Length: 155
Image (cartoon, rainbow, N blue to C red; front, side, top):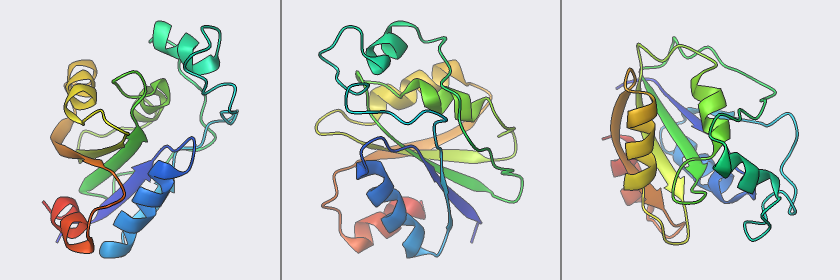
């Protein structure tokens, strides 16, 4: 069995809930990617052309600062979770991926979304970070059984 880290970014708590469920399956370590400046409801308003997340969507070079980093050298697999924003990953995921060396890890993604699947965000990550070993991801809705989650996390 490989040693896994469940790393996640959650703006509203949905992804956090999924990450906590995943971490309990095999008692894996849990790491929250925490922005230095928390996202407010106004920041998350996708209909506001001046909201923080809209600005980040328009400028993919923006790297929201994070409070914390982690040494991933003791892990074989990183299970990386995030909400889907505008059909892709939030810029803070780039901050995280650029904050440490993932050359000895493989990354499995999970996304939380009301309807967007994992394929688009993972394709975007593979293009942006081809040096990382990516594995098949999954969209989690919160309705997965414990067995489905176990099968996913231990792929």
